[in-house]
Length: 249
Image (cartoon, rainbow, N blue to C red; front, side, top):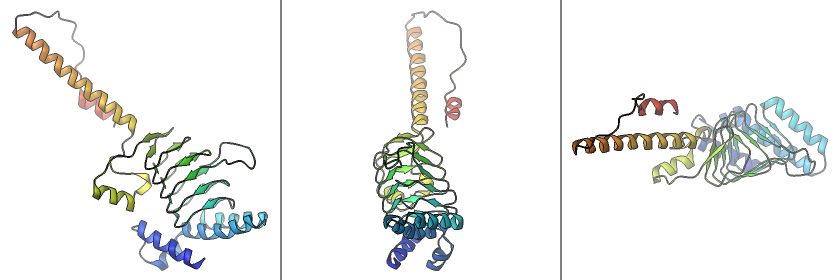
C-alpha cells in the first residue's frame, strides 16, 4: 500500500507542473486521496463486503468530489487531476499510467446486470476535462480524448478523439522532440497538430477550390491571348479563401 502511494506521488510530480513537493501532493491532491480510498473500497468489494465497499466510496465522494464505484478496476500510477465531478462506473477498467481530468464520465449504456457496461482505458490513455466515454469498448494504449468529447466507439491505440460525437484523429508521425513532449505531458488531451479532422477536411476542400479557380483564370487568359473568345457568364461573388477558412477554424 505505502509503496503504491509513493509511486503515485512520484507519477503526479512527473506529470503535473503545479506539483511543488511530495508533501503537497500527499495532503492536497483529491485525485490521490480518491484512488487510495478506492483501493480500500475495491478490496472490500472483492472480499464480498459489498455494503462496506459502497460506503467507503460514498465517503470518498463526499471528501474528494470524485465518484468511483468500488467494483471498478484501476491500475498503477493513475492520476486524476483536479478531479471534481469525475464519475467512474462499476465495470470500468483503467490501465496503468492513465490521466483523467475533471468532469470526466466513464459510463455505461446498458442496463444488463453482471455484463461489461463501462469502458476500458489502455495504458497511458489521457481523458480530457468534461469528456464522456460511454459504453463497453476500449480506448487504446496511449490514446487521447479531447476535452468535452463524447466517445461512443472504440479509439485505436495512439489516436485522438475529439468532438461530439467524437471523431478519430489517427496518430501522426511527430518529430523526436514533439513525441517526447507528448509522452511527458498532454494537458486535457491536447496534442501537437491535434486539429479536428472535420476542420482539416474543410480546409483541404477550400484550398482545392482556390487552386482550381486560379487554374481556370490562367486557362481563360491563355485562350484570350490566342484569340479564342470565351462565352461570358454572369459574374458571381468573388471566392474569398481567407474568409471561408476563418469560418471553419
